[in-house]
Amino acid sequence: MLGLLFIICTLGYTQRSAKWLTGAGNVIDFTVSPTISYLECDSFNNSWFAHGHSMICDKKGDILFEATPYYILKNNCTVNVVDNGYYNSNMRWEKEEGGNGYYPQLGIILPKKDDQYYSFYKTMSNEALDSLDANLSDFHYDLFRYHIVDMKENNGNGKVILKEQNIMEGARLSPNALSAVQHANGRDWWLVMPHREKDWLYTFLVTPDAIVPYPVQDMGGPDFHASNWGQSNFSPDGSLYAVTQYGSPYTQVNSFDRCTGKMTRLKSIAPINDTVEYFDPIFQKDTFSLSPAQSGVCFSSDSRFLYMVSEYDVLQYELSKDTYSWLRNDGLYNNASYVQAYNAPDGRIYLGNWQGTESSISYIEFPLKKGLDAHLCQFCLPTIFISMSPPNMPNYELGALAGSACDTLRFAPIVAETPIVVPNAFSPNGDGLNDTWHILNIAALQYKGYIVESVSIYNRWGNEVFKSSDINFAWDAKGWVSDSYYYYIRYKTKEGASKVQKGSVSVVR
Image (tube, rainbow, N blue to C red; front, side, top):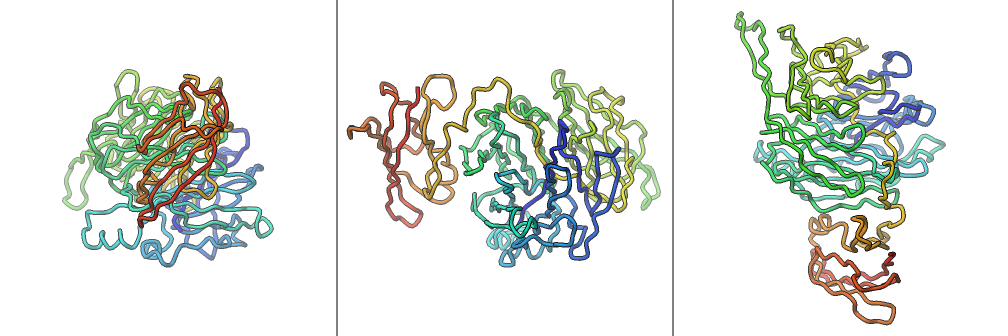
């Protein structure tokens, strides 16, 4: 049951959430200064809260429940594991990991409706683990799944009411870099993650009633070299997206359309090495290390700067001028092992660290200022126990895009009991929004081995108005009036069984 955690605290902040769980049970409360408290429960190991973790708060700001990649836990530890919230003992990878969510951005939680939440996550099948055992360089996650958590169940103690639902099977996914941003309509969500090796982005539209895979976006290369450490992040306004992998040939920055889900490549930033000088205690001499700025990425709130994280330092990259500066000037080696960076409600950017070597957290104090004036404050917030990473979370308070005509609330996909996802209506008026009727979950169908053989559309008098044998068809209803039409989609399953899906679609001009 690999699923991660987040905080959804609607306390009037314009960014992120009001309480963060940051590794080994340390809780930062941003409503007071911030201050640190400690989440201590006898029933689970707080070291599970390392990198892949999150929490959800209620509307009052109190912790509703928290989760590691393998457990969903109640807030006050009196109810330790939410009903049906244990890992899957049949999955050897999850069992062998023992609850430790060690890789960053393995999962994310998004609100569904009526006190229900999606918990999305990546995990490794037994077959992929066998492949890893045979070839240690073939480390990848091949399953993308979700659970649904209903916090109304059990008198408010919660229950996982739908568990281990596959969205992707046999995939090649990196063990990190899953992120999300709110749709332009202010209700739905875009979920984005990279392929493990190729420069591909998988995009999903998440609504209260459906999870719709969109066509894979090929960003044109060069290909990634995914490692265990890496991060993706949207800018706070959702207009930009950055992704990096430690050891990859570049960090990619894209513009993002919150209405259509389309990525457009803006630039690729080649690795910029940080030369770190330090005294080596083993060889008893001064030496140096080259550390590329590719462990994490985070935008400033005004999208002027992209902060790129290295093991020992943070690079501030000015996007409009292609100039950069390192935020440290002390020349000292301190084994910071920075990995991730997240915007916080207090205006700072907080950093995770890979090795958990300090009982404190580092942050960028003034992210809107240039160069050293941004002030990288190393290990400045003392914690009660060794801390690793802030929780991975989207900007839950982003809301609708002002002035956007985007409308998936009106043109909802048909999901019901059918495997092929199509809209129930579209508006072919040339405005670039919902202009064609087409299959929305092509990638998911291909993963499952479905073959679409033909598509036919008829008007109310039984006349065929459109026909195609191409799975990538797009009907624009040219020459046909606003009305209800009827479709037949003939397809074959992976096992070769022939089936027909039929329904209606409305043309709205």
